[in-house]
Amino acid sequence: MKNRTILLCLICIAVSSVSAFGITGEEILKKVDRNMQPQSYEMYKKLINVEPDGKKKEFTLYMAKKGNNKIIALFIAPESEKGRATLRLGDNMWLHIPNVGKPVRITSLQSVVGGVFNNSDIMQLDFSFEYKVDKMTEGKTEYTLHLKAKNTSVAYDRLEMTVDKKDMIPIKIECYTATKMLIKTLYYKEKKDFGDGVVRPSVMETDSPLHKGYKSIMIFARVKKRDFSDEVFTLNYLPRVGDLR
Image 1 (cartoon, rainbow, N blue to C red):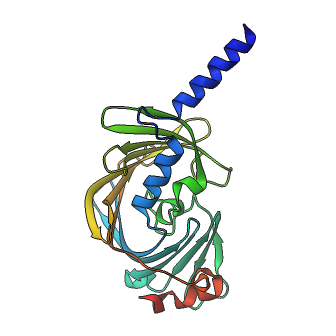
Image 2 (image 1 turned 135 degrees about the vertical axis):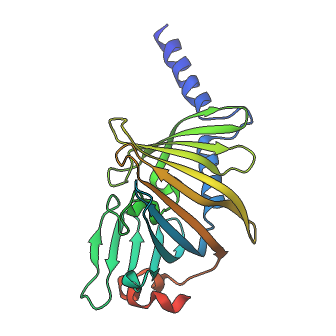
Image 3 (image 1 turned 30 degrees about the vertical axis):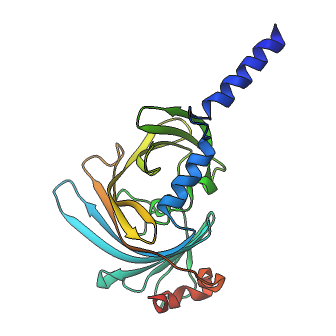
């Protein structure tokens, strides 16, 4: 009887991570990654922080990514931030400030722009690089992936990702601590065809119960596949990121 109970539990676990169409949660997550972020690409991104009184602050960045764990960004507006650059290699992040010595280390939970988005949101790596699928549920038009961080350096211990079945892109992501406290919710909107097979949301909004009345918006533009050398994703290259544009 004991062996039978264990076998039934194992079967239930296996079934929970496979949809009725035979696709696993891990396969769905990898499809989401490739639809959201080509393996190597460049893009422009506008960040808008909205305060409770309606006051806004905007930032414009140029970004380049290679593989599943290398990404670099350059501030091109406002003038006060122009020339700043950030580099992320896996769990490690740095900020370069013009006319300042060495790049300084930053963390995923900090924010170089303030507002509700943190550095991990801005410098997003592949989800499958940082998370594993704990469980999957299936609705009529969407999958829900319950994700667990692979290590403690990841910004959010758990994610609950709602994925559109047809397009295999996220609709909403709820971000939680290890104690299951909701930190923020990310909303993906306005699907757009950027060309060359890249069809993904062009807007991401977030709010947080920890920042009541505040909202941050991320607008994606000119997402384009492009190959880069490994040299681009080094500390020595940070002052020269503008040469890529």
